[in-house]
Image (cartoon, rainbow, N blue to C red; front, side):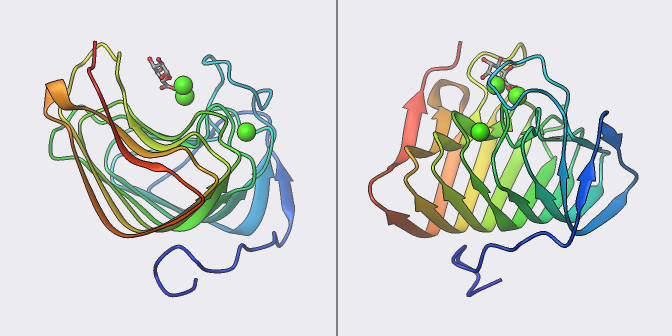
Length: 200
Ligand code: ADA
Ligand code: CA
Ligand code: CA
Ligand code: CA
C-alpha cells in the first residue's frame, strides 16, 4: 500500500457481507478485503453496537467497512488493525479499551473517510500507534477520551499519516499526562496537528 506514508491507493471491495449483529472475533480475522456493513444507523448516536469486537492480543486485517458501520471496531485489549478501510466511518471507527497501561494498539495501513467527529477513540489506557494511514473528510483522527470515568494516561504515535480535509490529527488531555508524537505527516488543506484539552 504505497510508500508507507498513507498515500497508497484506496482499494475496492472483493465482495460484500451484510451483518446484523456484532462479530465477536477470535485472535485472528482476515476479511479478504470484502466490504462489511449493517450495524446501527450511520449517525452519531453513542449507543450503537460495534461491527467487530477484537479480543486482547487479536488481529483484524484486510477488511473494508461500509455504512452503516455502527461503533466500528472495539479492541478490548492490545490489538492490531491492519489494512482496514472505512468508506464511511460510523459514530467512530475504532475504540481502544484496555485497562492496562502497557496495552499497545497498532493501526497499520488502511484509511478512513467521512468521520463526522472522531475516527480513533482511545478510552482505555496504553499506547495507540497509527502508521501508514490516510484520513479524508473527518473531524479528528485520534481523540484521547476527555470524559471517561477512568482518567488514564494515554499515548499516541502517528507515523506516516496523510490527511485530507480533516480538522485535527490528535486531541489529547495534557492534564492527565497524555502524549502525542508525530512523524512523516502530510496534510492537504489545513489541519491542527495537536489539540490540547483538559480532561474532566
Ligand atoms: C464521546 C463521549 C465519550 C465516549 C466516546 C466514545 O466522546 O463523550 O464519553 O462515549 O464518545 O467512546 O464514543
Ligand atoms: Ca463517540
Ligand atoms: Ca460518517
Ligand atoms: Ca463510539
